[in-house]
Length: 391
Ligand code: PLP
Image (cartoon, rainbow, N blue to C red; front, side):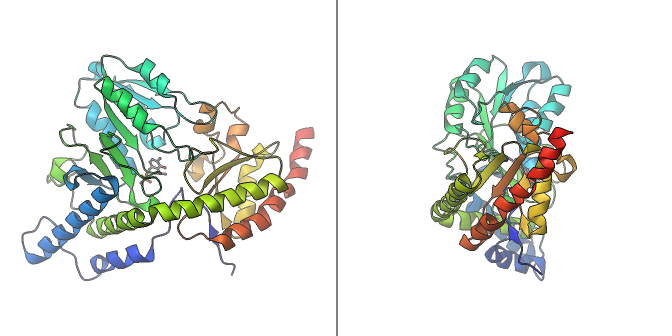
């Protein structure tokens, strides 16, 4: 049995044992409903509120400004649908970007079918939204601008502080899908003037199926889920106490380790880039060289773009888990990436990237092993590629 190396941390991250330890009592033994008045209920409520404080501290938010959800996707839906439904459809225009995660893009399509007007901002070849494009898109009826903090395919970090400023000058709310950025980039909702922000626990070494929406005090939303009135009536349903305890502990760990961890991941990723530049000259980095999440590499291999899935499977056989940058789910793995298409890639090249994303539990040895096998794995696909090209 080979030791598997996990380099797909943008898809999900392993649960940190410290987080698992915090959750443990709530998985066996403790079980109160936070809405109950008895001691078990009060203990559960305390645990949920502690998690709220921990998440708030990571974002420099007020704990009262957080709404817990069941995923990052749900937080995005709550932000977009919640704001849009506070207005009549004909009186609501949303602005987002062409590189958003389907959690935002599909929600915008849903809203468009209900009469909401949506503008999709373009990006440059670097995968970054140009603030000038936002400026030109704003209308009298623009109610919300939603641009992600960092892209899940390229890792490109978006100029959200500037975008928020432009939105506010126009009197429009600003939401950011920060699912990839929280715990990796320093975020400060106050200093950056963010009105709504989505996050997800499983991207920061917390549990899957837990998310949150930061909602600045005073911002009005229509809830998506109606019922017993939990989460200030914005997300009914008995809280996932163990999951929230995990999210809280994960947020606290991320806050304490963020700076040091970022520096470490930047060095590991640079080592991969430098090594590949000398050994695989036809490899290229997709997206901005510097405005990128630490530890996030989206690579293309000139002339071999049609082979990304075969490369992924070859690496998988060798015990290394990576992802193609194409689609966010295995069912759509062979389709061109809408993010790369938005960056100007033709459909063949947009199918062919390899995403390597490092995380907390990766080390030098993992990078060494990757560098040992990747050049050969890429080269091994060459003869078939050229054969196919000739037929
Ligand atoms: N937004 C972005 C940018 C993501 O990368 C993801 C997950 O990959 C999501 C939203 C969805 O988050 P969740 O998996 O918690 O639903």
